[in-house]
Picture 1 (cartoon, rainbow, N blue to C red):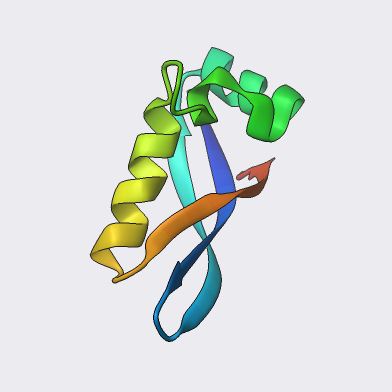
Picture 2 (cartoon, one colour):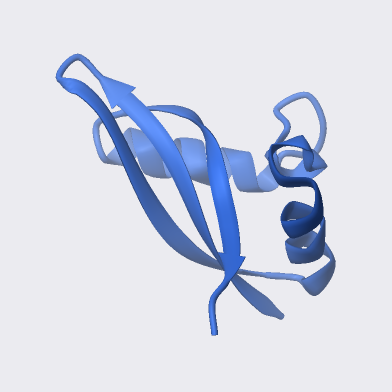
Length: 76
């Protein structure tokens, strides 16, 4: 299991915001995101996209609409 700190952007009527969240995930998922970034199947709405669904949900409960993935790094 690895933990990734993922930074993402979102917007609402008042403007845009950038925030990050640390998510635990399988090593294979983390490696794919670290290697492929926004092109990872885990961030793609047309493929598996589990991580993208989590980020969209987090943006929504903060009162925003998810815009996209910025970057990820391993959280120690």
